[in-house]
Each structure stands twice: as C-alpha cells, then as structure tokens.
Length: 147
Length: 166
Image (cartoon, rainbow over all chains, first blue to last red; front, side, top):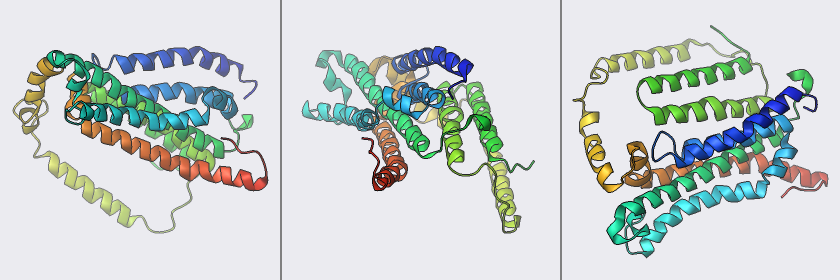
C-alpha cells in the first residue's frame, strides 16, 4: 500500500471528521438520533479505515491492542458500575436518580444516560477495532495486484 | 440471478443494508436506520471482506440438490405473506403497538427524564437492563472472536520462536 498516494491523502483527510462525527453522535444522542452503539461503530470505522490504508502495524501503534482489549471490559464496567453506584446509594440498580440531589432527580437521569452511553460506546468501539485486528492479523497482506 | 463470486455477494449485501437503512428512514425510525447504516452497511461489510481474505473469493458448486432449500424458502415466504394479511394498515394509530406502552413513554419522558429523544430515554433509562444485556452480548462476542482468531496466532508465533505481541 506504499504508493496508493490518493487513498492515503483522502483517508487522512477523512479520519478526523469521522472521529469528530462519532463524538457528536455519542453526546448528541439525548437530543437527536444516535447514541453509544452508533457512535462506537463510527468511531471504530475511523481506526479501521486507518488500518485498511496504512496497514495493521501502523494501527497497532495508534491503538495498542492491550488498550483496545482493556476498553472492551472498561465500557461494560462503566455501565455496570453506574448501576452498582446507585445500589450503594440505597436506590435500585441502574436508578439514575441516585447520581444527583434527591430534589433534582431529572439531573441524575441526564448524567446516568451520559455515563451509560459512554460505556456502550467504549465497549462497541473497542470490540469493533479488536475484531478487525483479529481478522486482519490472520489475513495475508493484500498485494497491490489484487486491487 | 446467480453469483459465485463472494466479493460481489458481500458488496450486494452491503448495498441491501444501505437500502434498508433508507427504508427505516422512510418509516421514521431514524435511530434504527442509523444503526443499520453504520453496522450493517459499514462494519459488517468490512468484516465480511476480512473473512473473504481468510477464505476464498469463489463459492464452491453445491454438492446436493437445491429442491429442499427452495421449498423451505417458498414455504417461509408464503407464511410471511399470509401473516401480512392480518397486519393493521401502515401508520394507523389504533394498533396495539401504538396503544400499549408507547403513549406512557411519550407522556412520562418529558417529566421524568427531560431529554428530547424518547428513543434514548427508553433505551438508556427505562430499559437500562436490556441495554446492559446488549452491551454484555457485544462484550462476549468480542472476547469470543479474540479468543478464536487472535489466540491461535499468538500460540503459533510462539512455536516459531518469534517475539510475541502483547
């Protein structure tokens, strides 16, 4: 892939907007369509595009496999931990009103949804990147003549 | 239409996925359409291509007769068409789907959750347990793929005496 100059330049231009759009989808999910699942996938697409064009070794340098694998578990942990926190506060599991003052129960809902969606997004993005790495690490390098 | 080239099949399924995302937009299910476009048309096409790189690009000719699969497809299709005859007209407001819990969510979300997107309110708050389950499913699937695909390469590399990646 060393001399696919156009592909490299175009993907370099595309990846930052993709990541930015993923963050927008993640945090705008309360107001419009979107949320953790979609944002996680879009965020992972940015990394996968980089891996496709620049090769797996470059991707490993940007997203070290150990960190990606930790992200898979951290997302679930963030989600489940939000629920466990409300248990410690004496509320039901995943009752977000435990996250704010009792008078402002609605504010707890905002924070709870934000945390939970962040957990979903982290897990989905990490799983997608890890699955892509697992597939790509087994496949032989695609030769230029195969394109 | 018959295709043996699996690369074309993967591309067609991606196109189909994108078209169904458009269909979901037409049905006013933008959240579902978003997911379909991102997951169905985007990621799964890439992963299918990754699988093709591991296997072959051409489908092998079938060994046995196609009569039974064809029969199953026709019977299932006929059953589905028969089922649609009983469905209420598209978009009618007095269907069980619209009258069961949906009005309650629409009424309670502004008061209890106070966010404009009711889909997110249902997904993350009212049905928080379900979404936790979905996240765990993705977690499990990711772990399974890593164990199946990545674990064996590490072991093989170790046998070769090369350095292992962390």
